[in-house]
Length: 467
Ligand SMILES: Cc1cc2nc3c(=O)[nH]c(=O)nc-3n(C[C@H](O)[C@H](O)[C@H](O)COP(=O)(O)O)c2cc1C
Image (cartoon, rainbow, N blue to C red; front, side, top):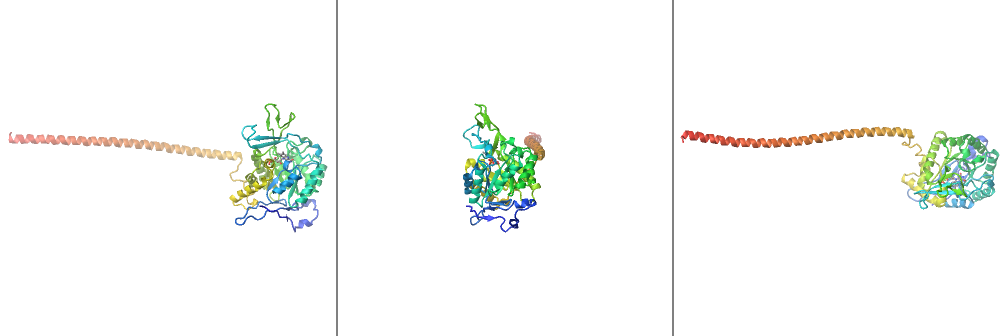
């Protein structure tokens, strides 16, 4: 069982005495100001794998983070997440004016394994047309404050989103930071959330807009900022690079994938459908996991090559339901792993299974810390571009063809040998039969000779005696 011990990551650091640093010190002042929970030593004997994660000056008891969405809607559920042992909690996305947000029902549609539309199979895909939080900002801010007062050693991250307006963004940041949250995650990625107001993926898909908005945000923020990326873009490394170059400390990937869950073949309406109206939504859960891994791998490589010099962070998300799913993100280079739909389906207690499962994986490979294996599969020696793979495969095919031809040649030779041997045996048999016949003939001749010489002798005796 993990215990939580209060610990300041920058205790005694001169940074704490600097007061409010100048703009040039922005990155320095945005790390290490928060406290964290730590994992207790394991049982006696073999050292217990340590799930502790440190990045951007934040410390988490484990890498599992509640993702922005229904599991971070209000005080009650976020408190539940802390009590169950989640490494950190990211709130549902908030904006200045919740009155502009109208959430509809039904806003979810599910894809089950087996035939489409089956009501029995396990859920593998989930579509939502949910918008950001429709609760008044003041309510959310009070709840953030209350949570930080009750859980000062736990990491609370506020997810925020605003219109394309510098003053609005900076106002929102000021109000949210005043509650004591440890970091900000910027929702540049909701695929269906108010693109007409230049919000969500509308910004994340446009590098020029993104650069400008990140500039406003990073000018204002005093806590670490993570930019949450949309997968609905050709090259996800481009906005991720822009976000980091514009001062963000971390990148989160992925938000949901633009989707239409299906068409009701009775009503002919796309799903989910609200009183005859519908819209494409965001796809999540198990089915998106491979896509998320692909996007995270691309970002992780880019970060390793271009941003390895500082304490940048990467948070992987998409279809996580087991510790093994999380291990995959970490093996690609993620520091933390977020879960949204998995919590909606399995509840907050899921974190215990995630931790136990991740520890099993670590024991199996003798890893004692997350850093022991973080990024290990980012440049797997056998991971190649499809073109390179094609060349390798062509090479293998040519080689296999050669082997096949060789083996055919040997087969031909073997057949020839067999034929020759059979012929030899046959000939030897014939020869031996001929030899037998010759011997038999020789015996006949010998008998005949004997008889004839006997007759000759008889004849000679007869003559001599004149019988
Ligand atoms: C119902 C629902 C609501 C969501 N709301 C938000 C949100 O408010 N802000 C945000 O950044 N992401 C939101 N997301 C996206 C998730 O945080 C996450 O990026 C995505 O669902 C993929 O992860 P998963 O497969 O673990 O759910 C939402 C997802 C779902 C399913």
